[in-house]
Every structure is written in structure tokens, then in C-alpha cells.
Length: 96
Image 1 (cartoon, rainbow, N blue to C red):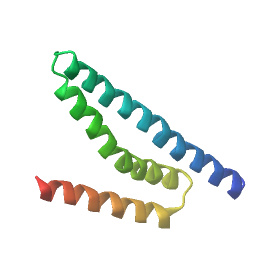
Image 2 (image 1 turned 45 degrees about the horizontal axis):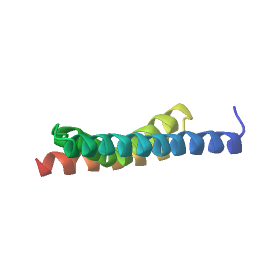
Image 3 (image 1 turned 60 degrees about the horizontal axis):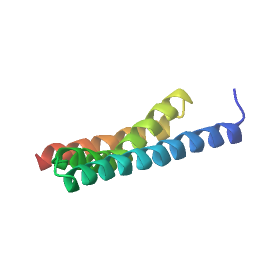
């Protein structure tokens, strides 16, 4: 079994990487959409895709945490993550 501190550091690094790169990618997509809009080539769909990515980042974080907890056999936190993910999905479905 791996050392708990190393596992925690690895988990935090993965989550931070997801949020860091996801934010930069979403910002780049929004920027590209805005640039397309200013140049007269539309760009609304591209801008919406970037905004959707910003919205999906926290959901992806919870899904990543669920996968990490299951892999680490930390079933209490995996259950909590699954519950949070289920609530998010239920809210999205109810919103439709």
C-alpha cells in the first residue's frame, strides 16, 4: 500500500492539473469564439462550447475524485462523491 501522504499529494496534483488546464482550454475556446465573432465569422457556437466547458469542469472534478477514491479503495469518500455526482445529474435532468 502506498504512503497516505504521497497518495494525497498525487490526488491533489491530478485535480489541480485538471482544473488548471481545463480553465486555460476553456478560456482559449471562449477567446477564439469571441475573436471569430469580432471578425464576422460567427463564433457564437464556439463561445458557448467554451462556457459549457467552464460549467463542466467542477462536474469533471467530482467524477475524477470518484475514480481516484475507488482506485484507492476509499469507499466512504467514493460513496460521497457518487452521491454528489448523482445530485448534479438529477439537478441537470430536472432543469431540462
